[in-house]
Amino acid sequence: MGVLGTLSICHLLNDMMQSLLPAIYPILKGDFGLDFGQIGLITLTNQITASLLQPLVGLYTDKHPKPYSLAAGMASTLAGLLLLAVATHFGVVLVAAALIGLGSAIFHPESSRITRLASGGRHGFAQSVFQVGGNAGSSLGPLLAAFVVLPHGQGSIGWFSIAALVGITMLWRVGGWYRAHLAERPGRGAGRVHHEAVTTREVWKALALLLGLIFSKYVYLASLTSYYTFYLISRFGLSVQAAQLHLFLFLGGVAAGTFFGGPVGDRLGRRRVILWSILGILPFTLALPWADLFWTRILTVIIGAVLASAFPAIVVYAQELMPGRVGMIAGLFFGVAFGIAGIGAAVLGHLADATSIAFVYRLCAFLPAIGVLGFWLPDLETAHQRRR
Image (cartoon, rainbow, N blue to C red; front, top):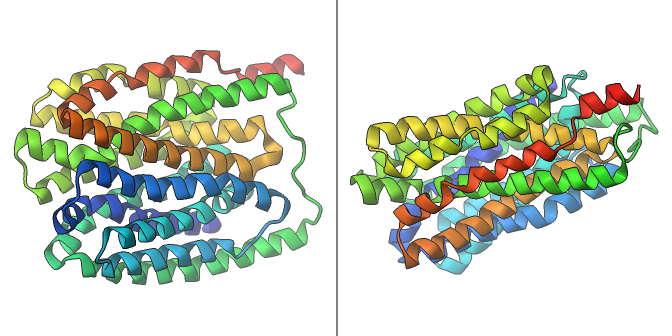
């Protein structure tokens, strides 16, 4: 629990700093005269950097573990924040976004592997403890942007370097624990390539289905994390600060859903959680574009909580499909999630420029229908019992 708690706190710090970037989009839009397409390009640069590198980092560290790479990833995030605080040109903002994305690419695969090692067999619970830190950090980003960055300006982003330094120190200690663990258990390699109760063909089919579900989940989340504040401002006339507080409520719901998704998956089965957490929010997403401000608050919190509960279950389910590729799977799914969110944000930004933010939300409301793919996922628990 000490290791899990430390990783969760560091995930909070990491994702808090990561979430500062989209949280200050209204500031960057005003200071640099950006359109929605350029806002989407910032998100694309940040998240594509993470998505392309994460599976490669995970694949490499499956065979060559690097205990202190977590601290190095946090150092990259630190460099990106400091550069963002002093940026005077749009190109510099893109470089800062790429450095922040690189920090995420290094952090997630190895920290997810250490989370599984420290789980004591409760993989869903451990993954939820780890991920809820990240979601809590993501929800803090807009709040801190509203009360720190908005009043004090772009340069105040540099103050968050203190959080990065704290994270580097904590992750260095986790690296020492991981190094000692590797020394005590030499030769504990990748193990079998896939789950013993399913065939290789079924594994690849299931991974393809999971990626389809990730597409549905993260394109919809991108519509909210990147453009929710603009939607509230344009439709309901809220101030930037009030809109940021509404974004904080939504991300708080995401954090709550993440925490409960893993333990519920441990008890009821991960396939069931994956299926109903995505497909089950369809009525709420269809209602959202037509709701008033009061119901918009409620619906977005429900959508965030239920939809977020899928990701811990997806990651653990995929790791159980391929238990010998824990780092690669973590890197793949975190990376694909970031990449799809980045591409989705860019496409939706151009679509919003061509039409309107309201049209984007009416269109995205149908994305959770893709959750029907969950019906075709193999039931690993039943398959394992049948094999026995």
